[in-house]
Length: 268
Image (tube, rainbow, N blue to C red):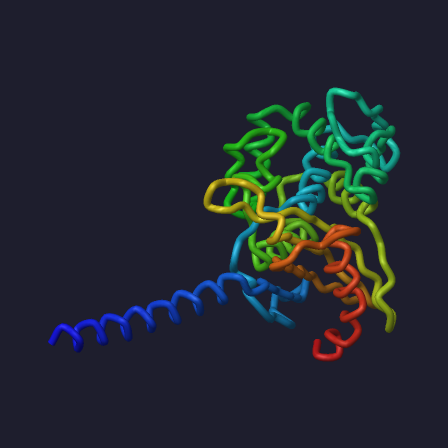
């Protein structure tokens, strides 16, 4: 009986180990999503992957920040205001320069974003996020950090829904804010007559201990594509399981979406 019990226990533990290994493997798989919707109808044109899972928006949040900044009068046009870098910002070398709205979006300058939110103030910033219905609307981690691997989170499905509200006039902002936010967003040629405007975002997931996990880089590319009279809205997300050295993971996500887009569009 003792031998039989020992055997059963060993078999049970073996199945448990297999299950745990399988669960760990599943947990370590990359998380991917690509979703494209039609601007006019809102219909889903293409959707693959875990598009309902929410993650930190990172620098894709520069697009709603541009809307806020122009609507509040903090930002003026494509070239104003131009703010000088200050040593207290303690940012990487590439950010240590004078920045205007176009440079801010193109080069993804974090300190410029943080200056906008400081000038908005806590109440106005939180109010904009709530009225925008942006993601989980949680900016409890503050003016300068909430969208950076922190409390604010948004899914790819929510990203495209938010951009559709923006493009169709569904957000509580001025026409000037709409026009300027669109003007400063980077543009790319995707082939077959498609022109893309979009914003990247890159970061990492955090472990259960709250520390950044460099083996789980996160990359976004969100925006819209235009061909003739038609405009569609997209989001692509990759949460990988290995470190990306050199250029940010978001550049690869962006470039892959641009390369894939003409083929995707054949099904629209």
